[in-house]
Image (cartoon, rainbow, N blue to C red; front, side, top):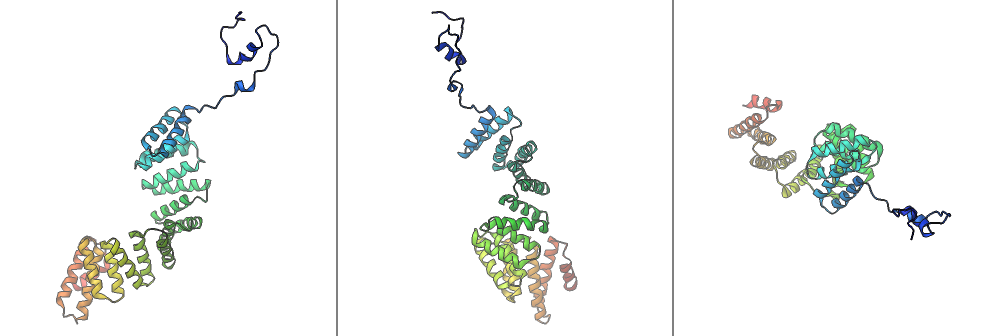
Length: 333
């Protein structure tokens, strides 16, 4: 059989050879001859493997795949985001921030890159930079719950509750059943001095999430600011049963003092100093209780005065910037 001048059969020539080497007629090969499954580019394949491994909880292997993709294609945004997620998850916030930053630089309109960058910056306590990143993310996806919640939290960290308020409100509108969103809105109202509204949000949060010490303390503080001292004391007693602390006992002492339960207040202040002798507000509480006892005795209970003076001195040694306590110490010391 003749070779027809052909040294190698190629895929393109299969149909012509089937018709005979000498045939003058040329036929178009069947379309199926040219059909092939798309083969992912190496970098994309590495990213896909990375996401699959991360989904299985194999984060180190997933990170290796994302970093491999970056080595192959240094402009692949999804690889930087995948790596940033894993670095953040294992607490390496600095590397995470760099990965997200590069992703955001490569693709400024990528929400995940901007949001991830903001989160990493906030974890690094670079809060002003975090706000800017979150705001860029919100220009892309204005109604994202997490971005609204986090930018509100970041503004609170910066001491800017007026700026935080619209984002905290929007987060609650987006997910009214979110306890953390309610807590954040309550904290924003409290920072603005709007404690009645803060109480409403904290109480709703208490119905939606686990009762954390922070939530109960915030609720107690706002209850006190609105003159609801009985409820304040009850909230703090609940907190102390769960997680006793010097701060909780000191606030309980304040609530009891406001309720004119002076002996119980003094007991709470003493308990606070036993738990943390450096908690100077508790020493102030002891001093005020003992000064009152001295004055109510017609200035005859000198032992009470001595204890009050000693408590004030201990407080001033711990924190000198207390003009009212300095004034009392000057008068009675």
